[in-house]
Length: 215
Image 1: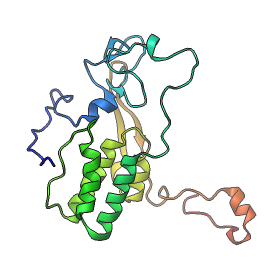
Image 2 (image 1 turned 180 degrees about the vertical axis):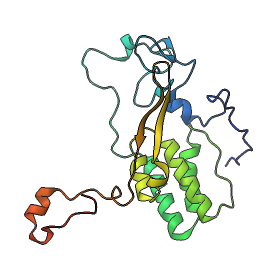
Image 3 (image 1 turned 180 degrees about the horizontal axis):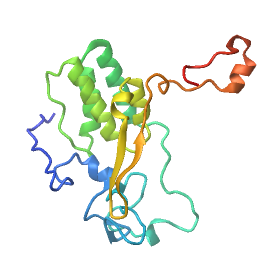
Image 4 (image 1 turned 135 degrees about the vertical axis):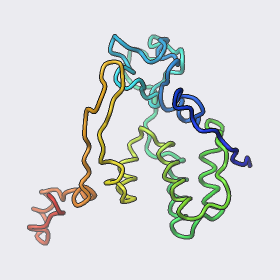
């Protein structure tokens, strides 16, 4: 097993360098070819004009792949839909076991299976983490591994930190749009719970006049 080397801090003047390999597997960065056109594509309304980045995940583009030979005339996606990924199973297991009994060897093993697979090839986690440190590592790992897969919102609600991380403005810095475009608000007194559907309330006599707070 590889030990974790001392990695230099990312260069904020060139933020595409010195990143987890999943960075380039998840998004198109500057200089990468998208549909045979240097990225970010601008002026004609194609990806990259709003933020300077676009998701590579869920596409079949691989650098110079062109649209003409990437998609046929059926109109059907060539990408398999995701029910649940094995990486999710491993990280769910690691998180649960760490909360139950701390960072045992099985916790490290589960996370390192995600990090060490050939397509990622990241170093293993450093030894000696305590429960709280491992918790933060797992949360970070989930955010990197499942970027754009729709799990983050459920994760931060489950961890009860949504009001800390979601209450912020969304700021764009692309070719066409710059500045704050949306202010997101998460109300902890309400938004951790969903409303009971009215039809369920109507069909259950013991639920009459009952509803989750704020609805």
